[in-house]
Amino acid sequence: MTIRAPREPAARVIKTDFGLEFAKIGASRYDLSDPYHLALTVRWPAFVLGVFVLYGLINLIFAGLYLAHPGCIANARPGSIGDAFFFSIETLATVGYGVMAPANLYGHVVASAEIITGMAFTAIMTGLIFVRFSKAKAKIVYSDVAVITRHNGHPTLMFRIGNARASVMTKVRAEANALIRETTAEGGQYRRLQELPLVRSSVPVFPMVLNLMHEIDEHSPFAGLDAQALAETEMTILLSLEARDPQLAAMVYDMKAYFARDLRPGMRFVDAVTQRDGRTLADLRRISLVEPEDAA
Image (tube, rainbow, N blue to C red; front, side, top):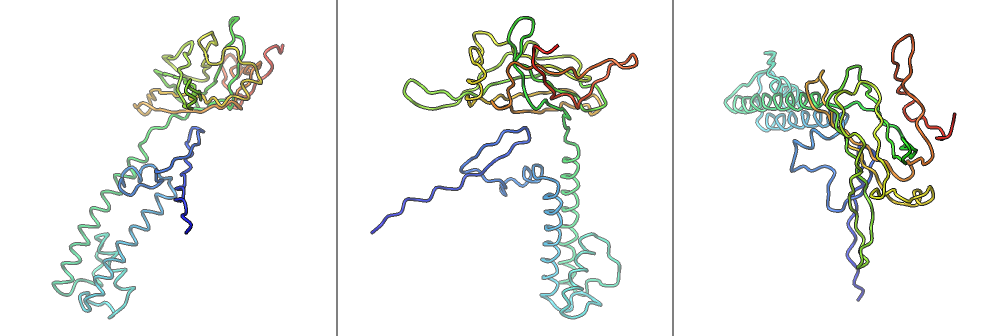
């Protein structure tokens, strides 16, 4: 008798908005036990489709209840699914055109239950739509790559970010961490986060473009790594930001992941801020442009 090994459960691939992709076993994409979180995290097309499906399902259930007791709706054709369904829509929306109406006690009880359901459904959907619209977004543009260049005589890892809003953000705080895979003395594999101290991690105002710099010293995980070693490493850099948007009167948060393939040693960012007609001009289209650090 052949005993089959238990099937390996399927891994759920998770793609984040900030570029990091990983897989999990035992995690479900849609957790029906937490409908509030589900309703706020699904994309807008899925949310709108879910609202219409739920609305139609509620009306079908109540239409079935009306059909289960013939004669409970005045002026409705006997056995007509269409009449029962559209009467259900009118009742759920508390419209009540007056052409069809409950004809007996059973009809009044079901119609009353549907009116209460409709009021609750409208209140819940209104609240969810408001929360989805009111979520503050950072609107920050990141450079596609990070460069390793010399700054004030020191090798420095640089990221560049741009404020894509027409307003000025304030109280910006940035944090960079490297996710490093290591092998312990016992031969075990694990990943650890090492902070990458930034030359300046906070700025009072963020109007246009900002360079975030990590000086590579003997304590940095990038110390002693040449271009080939950087390309072979599996290091991931996580850049997280928080800032205050005065227009929204709220704090906004954002993240960006950089991988080894995104590092450009020996390169520097091309200037994205220039002077034109006596004004400072920031061109966010140039935020990812790089050139050799020894270019004129």
